[in-house]
Length: 478
Ligand code: AMP
Image (cartoon, rainbow, N blue to C red; front, side, top):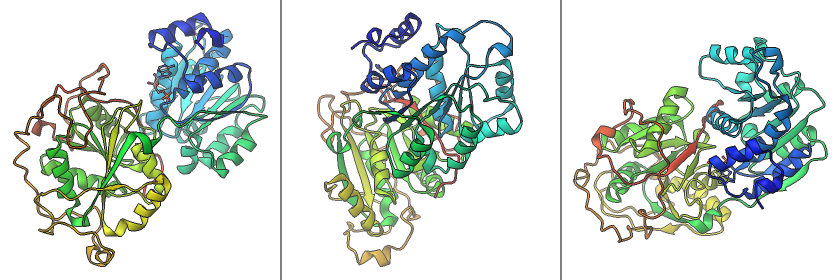
C-alpha cells in the first residue's frame, strides 16, 4: 500500500515524500481511510507509530477546501482542534501538522502553558484553521475570550489515556461543551482502560476501532537487568556504571521531582554530565534539558515518570531505573524508550530491599524475571562490602531510595576511559556502534545549563539517538 492508494491529495503526497516516508505505517493505513470518510475513530496507538500523520494527513485533506490566502481573520476559523496532554507533545504535533501542510494554505498554531500567552493571542486573533493545544492553556484562552471554538469540525484527543492520568478530564469536558455537537471526533490512546472506554462512549458516534500492535514488545527487544543494592549505595553504583561502561546517552528514572534534582546534583558532583526534566522546571529549562540530551552535550537525563511521558526517543541504548516505579505499567513505559525500531536496548534497575513488592509486580507484568547481575567492584556508598539483597534489610536500609551516601565516588577511569575496540561488543553484549543513526541537528545548544556539567566531559563524535519530542506535566507529580 502506498500513500497514493490512500487517496491523499498531491500537496500532501509531496510533503510526505519530502519527509522520506515511502509507505504508510500500519496506523496510517488503518486510520486514514475512515477519517477521510468522516467517521469517528477510537485508535489504540502509541507515540512513535506514526499516529500524528494518521490523523493530520486526512484532517488536512478534509480542510483543504477551506484554504485561502486572505489576510482577514474571519476567513480563518478554527476547524480542527487537537488536544494533547503535554506542552512538548503539543509542540511536536503542531510541527508535524505544519510540515505536512506546507503545500497548503492552511494556518496552524499551538497554545500551551508555561510561556507568554500574548504571542498565542496574536496568532489566534490573526486566524488559524488548525489549533493544537494543551487543555489548561486552551481554557485560559477561552476565559480571556481569545479563542472561538464554535466552528470546530474535527476534534482530536491525542494520548487520551495520559490526559486522564494527568487529571485533565474536567478540563476536557469543559472544552467539549464548547464545541459544535455536529463534529467528527478522533480519540487516540495507548491503552484502553474502562475510563477511556467511558470517555469514548460519551464522545464518539459509532466509532471505527483502529488498533495496531504495540510498536515494540519490550520483553523481546530489551535486555532487562538489575542489581540488588542498598539504597544509600545506589548513586555510587550509578556513577560507576555510567563511567565504566562509557554510557553516552542514558535516561535515568526516579520517582519524584526532589529525587530528580538531588540525583542530578550528585551526578554532576561526581563528574557526570547530567540534567533533569520534571514538571517543576520551567518550560525553557525542560526544553533546554531535552535539547542538551538530544544534542549529546549532556549524557544523562534524569526524569520523573510524568515528565518523561510522551518522550519519543529513537534507539536510546540505556534506560536506568534508579528507583522502580510504584506502578508496574510505568516500567513498561520507561523501558519503551529503548529497544525501538528493531534495535536492542538495555534496561538496568537498581533495586533495594524496599522495592521488592514493586519488583514482584514488574516481573509479573513482564512475565519474566529481571536478570540479576553481580555487583561490580566500585567505591562509594555506606557499605564497604558487596550488597546482599535480603528482606530483612528492608528495616535497616530505611533511607529513601534516592538517598546519597554523602561520600562521593571519584572514578579514576573518567578522564581516560579504556578505549574499546570498535568491533568488540560492550559488556552488555550490545554493539552500540551499530544502530545509531544521528538525526541531523538543527541547532547546537550551548551548555549553559545550571545542572549541566558538559564541560567535564569529552565531546564525542559517536552518533546519538534521536529524540523526537517530549513532554512535561501540567499536574503535580508524586
Ligand atoms: P508519531 O507516532 O506520529 O509521533 O511519529 C513517530 C515518527 O515516525 C515521526 O518522526 C514521524 O516523522 C515518523 N513517521 C510517521 N509516519 C511515517 C512513515 N509513514 N514512514 C516513516 N516515518 C514516519
